Length: 331
Image 1: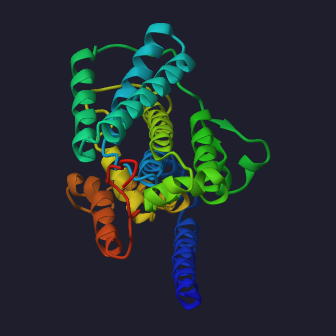
Image 2: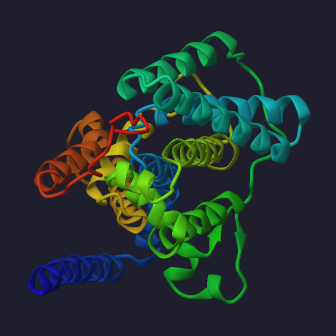
């Protein structure tokens, strides 16, 4: 067991060292462009990382949630149009989080109380969100402003790291805080221990006095609120608008990143950063036109890389043992 742990740590260290060396190489070639690409990559990564947190919270307690895409889409819609109607982006954010939490609650009802097939339950949420946003969408709406980027004093002046990590909008910093807090909560609190127990051995957790149904309800509902924050970030901070099909599959991509990150918040965050940087570099390649290849291939490059990495690593990971299995007291 000790040798396996050391081997995994050694492999992670090698990946980390490679990332540092690659960053240093690109920075030495053009520091301004490298800094800009990494800052853009961090912005692209945040909604994916938050969406991956939704999957982690749900699957750690045994609930498969493929409705993340629908949660993000409907929450982004509500955030933008409530902000447009009230001319207040904070009210739009609150409305979005409430919407996402209610969608999480609906999923919990279908998966926990009704014991529906969880894939079908998530598909229902995605179809509902797509239909509602398409039917209610009104072109030409605008919001008064977006959550503006601001600098953290002193830290924002650090070369490279300052612009990449410490010059962002409020939702970015809130999202990072949620990811770090979720990591601590899962591995260092009694709530996290109970959640992992419910996802691995619900009958044992039930015997120990843990209410499996209640914990699943709580986690899936809170996860819906986090998914809503990811959607609101897109419409209220990153883009500042809304269109049909606005989330463009980010919820499904987040599920792949969750698996790549081994259902660990920090691992999923690293996977999201990898995807975000790939997307940012692809955009830079299209801007610079340094290679004579179709723009469609360049735009697809981040997804191709993610599929390749996921294919290589998927067979080496193990999901929570009770994932997707309805639980009935007394089983």
